[in-house]
Length: 135
Image (tube, rainbow, N blue to C red; front, side, top):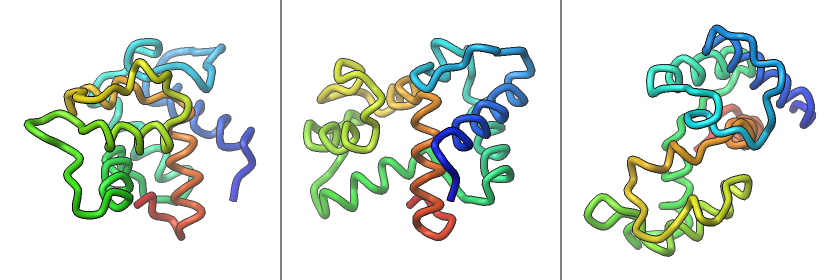
């Protein structure tokens, strides 16, 4: 189990290595895509680095799995967009994302745009609390 500050420092180290640039002022609220200019390949590399550093297994889609588990048999997606109930659950798992970024009928492809440094910290913490798996 890591403290909040060691989680933050570790995730930031992984981000700096992944993006291969000096980012002295990373904040927990920084969005990986819009603020730190990560792309989809960077997400994969970042996940690998985080898994190695913290000895956990995470997957950004774990948020969908947790949401589906919370909603039982109720669908979370209809025609490629998240339902209002699914978005309610995402807000519980991603309190760091402002409400306007997570909205009913949001296209599934837009979820990753809301991922922040804190989102990855939360994925690691959840995985650590669950024996190394985030879902």
